[in-house]
Image (cartoon, rainbow, N blue to C red; front, side):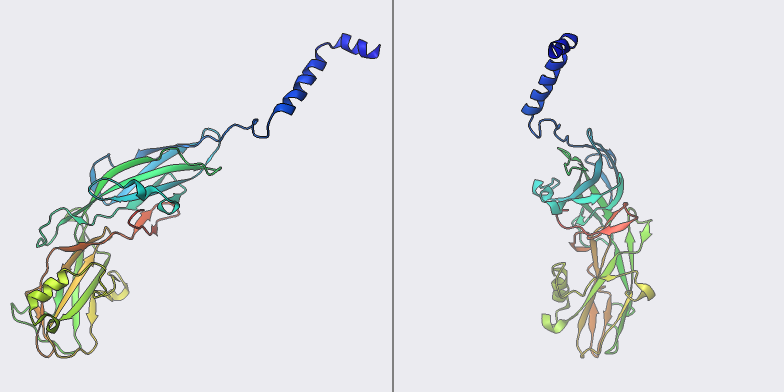
Length: 320
């Protein structure tokens, strides 16, 4: 009688309870959770697609996660050969770098001469790049497709002038076995009116005896050295304290004819070499300094500045 009276008063309640129990029994452990949606990404500011710009570029981006929060962004920069990027440059975890803000300033390499005339004192260097950016949410899911922008960075080559030993026309200068070489280097950023200090310098003192006492052959040998050749001295920061890398004093050197050459590197990767053929030095006999105006090679920029966490330097490779 009590049970009958209960049904009579609440005829729907037992049915609802039964459906609820069945629903719990049939649901799997993951059926009640929606799949994580990947975040979106967009570039909101930067060089126009396909444009030519300076090598120091600020880019802006944004992202949105429809079902959560964005934890950080990841970017990748490719150095494009023949004007197009290789998709393999964007694969692998080491190709992407993390950033926690919505803009950064980057240094893009510009290390390919636009003009093959190597005798020009100052020449234009360029390099094509593609910048990729993607969002990553708190679940570790990244954007389905990154946003990207392709453009060409440019700069003007740096220049270095040997100031000691002094010029003596076409005749060699006489110097003692312990000699000091001095130079002044300048870097032209976007025009020859905007003069900066370059990044670094390196030099070589090559005996002519190794080249049959042919100074032109010695110059050609120096010019054709690979950029990373061990014959060159290490790159020295031009702005070192006390102007310590704006001159070099030799150890005692055996009497011989030599060619002294110095090259200069800017922060975009452009290299310029000089050993002025109107200058010369003599160590007991004679040593000619031969001028090799213009570029001698290219080196990928190993500095890339980013805005997050201040303005630190990030190392880049040939991929990103």
